[in-house]
Amino acid sequence: MKPYPQQREQIFLGGFEAVKKRRKKICTSRRYKYSWMRIDPCAEIPDIEGEDIPVIQNSSGANEFLHETVPFAGRPGEHFMIMCMNTHNQPIAVAVPFVGGRNKATIDRSIVFQAVLLSGATGFIIAHNHPSGSPTPSSEDVQFSRELKKGANLIGVQLLDSLVLTNDPKTYSSLADMGLLT
Image (cartoon, rainbow, N blue to C red; front, side, top):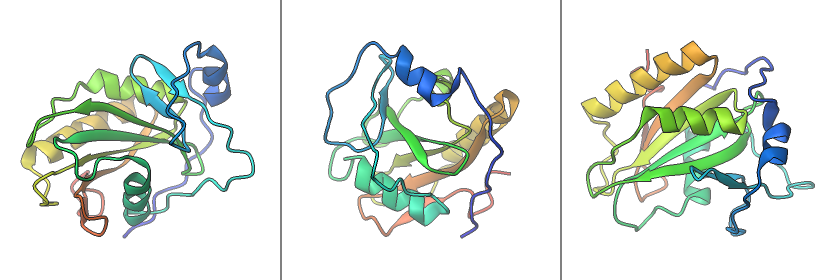
């Protein structure tokens, strides 16, 4: 597992503090510790003072964080997740903009970039689950991830990884670790 690169400070849309101030609508999903973005757009901005925000250093850390944070295990359908990160590789927002059928979720690229830019992220990780239990990425998964990486480079953010998760927290695939994102 390769460590994710640290990034220099970049600010989009006034940074995350400015985004928090612009929010008018607050979601009430207090179950989660981290900022949840829904493409209404609305976000819960929790008070996390005193809590240690984890640093996501590699694919296994991202896998553990998403299993701990997003309740997709045991639910039908593919869940597409976006974990937005700051310059220190700490999660600042998690979005689940698409939930699909048993073997496919249709994903709009513009919604992915909307979530990343509204959160003020400098990098992001995308992930989706395979309800079948197989962590093997399909050719569509690889092609979509490569397209997102090209688009992210154009707007100045970095796609750090693309994960394929299963209901088992120990079984996953990382396209970056497999060398498929280049």
